[in-house]
Length: 218
Image (cartoon, rainbow, N blue to C red; front, side, top):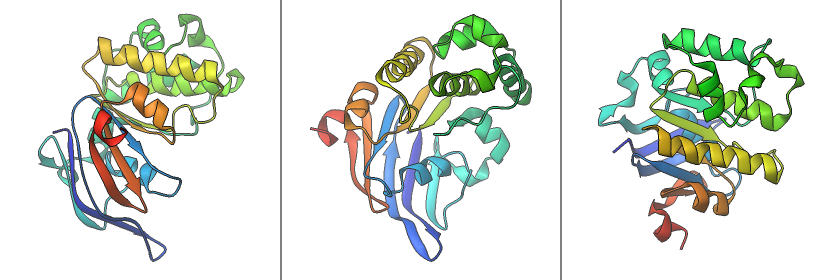
């Protein structure tokens, strides 16, 4: 099992954002779905220790998650946030920064292609990119670290249908080409059906369903 969460709780401002949440997340592609405020993005942040739970336990590949050094973990379990947050400069500057941080060799053209971008984007100023292009540049930057797991927080929520389809196609290609697992937060059950094999459904900070796509979203 990729991740195992046992009775996980997290409070903010005296309120339980996650409450006795238990779930299993296997290798492959998992969609975390649920209404706004259900705790989806908070759960995603726990999986690479951008936050730690107040209660309960999380395991990654059978080992307690809090036994991993956070920066090392984040190179292996890479989060692409909902809002693009690129460094000033070119797309290539961002990719080189990520690769150097992880101590990985960078193949710029191949990394861009895998994120659904033409190699000509390498020297583009990130401030001149559309929102969809910035989101794909964020995906490319994550891939430059050669992660084993990609955590994606609503990666297409602000995009038109064409840009959404491009990113979804890039993610499907990644699954075919690389041994990489994807954990995707989405408000759209149809996107979960297109991209997920496994679904964790949350409501009010609790797991209400967890299992194969065809069972949870029947």
